Length: 298
Length: 328
Image (cartoon, rainbow over the protein chains, first blue to last red):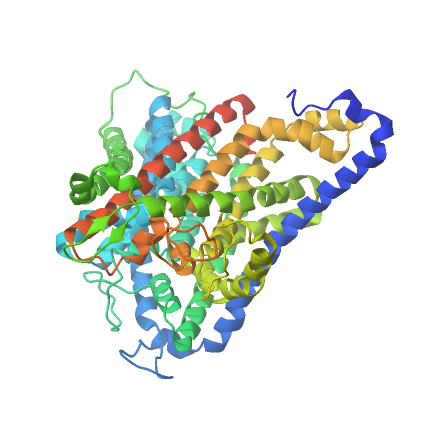
């Protein structure tokens, strides 16, 4: 503390005007920093809304892109919307049960040392760059078999797993022990206590975590570049071949020199952003609701 | 954040002496297998990336890491990570330099200055910035921010500070290392600020009140009490932010312009490790080139593992001495 500590000289009243000025300056700078952050968000969202709204129409969602079209007939990104739906849906189906089981093991069964170690591993997994996850799935699945929706969904699931597991752990520890004890005292076996008494208490929190994870991976491009990006213009729902997705479509269109492509990229970005903002808000609402409920039951 | 102290151990195994039930065993084994699988995943990632990089690893060894070259022409193939390492270091460190004071300022505003009715909404807005996908930030970066920086900011910096080689001639297209730095700073801002905010919230009020009662101004209290108290945690937040900046591929690929980095001008193109990988997703053909790209991913993976362990260690150490503070 010595180097930062408050010295006696600091507190002498002679310096008061200067100290007040420094204080006011620092308060001003901190306020300015917050204003800048909010301004950046507003500018980004406004840019996307302004440019995206003009190009947004039903064709974007219902019609596929026209191959090799120049000029105004490029139509929509139906293939990307369908692909994103399948990819994120499959990823959720893979990550959700595994994530919940990991959390159940760590909180309900594991000795403290293992819980600490595996939690650390989950944090590390969460920190692996998304592009590296993409390269990993490329090496694991794509090499030899080619790109597929399964590969893309698995890459997204790798990103979701630590998020879901962490969120489930956080609500599992909030479940009061008296509930577990009451159930066990009635002679209910531990596995049934866990599955039908403890887990149902956590639905709200798990749902919040899942919704946030979905919002996060719905916008992920990097894991899909090497696993599910080389696609045609056909709209497809089958994960057995590569699927287009909204983020990859935005990425490709943003690199194009054609303003028509930029317009479609903005429109897709607007839809993606609205989806993410809406799901984040829903998650926030779910979180406060479930926390209140758990707190009440405590 | 840390979970070592998550549960009281009481009531966890209330009847440890009794017979094992079949159902308990099944659930424990299945859940344990899931946990083991999640752990094994990190090992599998490492193994697969090393395996994929093997052609380049055996061809170049460690010389790859520092060599500045990326030549895919058949029969003249030569690859190295040197220029991408420089690009990664410059973009991520300068982005952190730009974002850190802003993020700490935001956290101070949100914990100490903001009127109560603004705290919730502003916190939510800053966190929303973290939820904007990188591809959308990149789209905005390439079409809005890049041209703006090219037309207004880069010429101004060039004429004022042009004697420093970093501030060379403004870019033609708006895609430049400088644009990438600004985009990365925007992306790590909410991460660092939200962790710092939690740390500042965890400073015990009696310490703050004690300082204020001694007659300090609010800033003196922040400098003398809050900063020393939260120092370790803020360091961890900065490391996590840096890790995020190093690993970000998409937004950087969109705005950085590409190129092998052999100049010091921030206003021209370059590449980072992550952006080089992302930019090559369709182009790589030869075995050696694919291996070299995966070698870049391996370097990235090593970085991220080291930084995450470092940050977690700090968080855990700080968390232990702060008790519940860091998680408030």
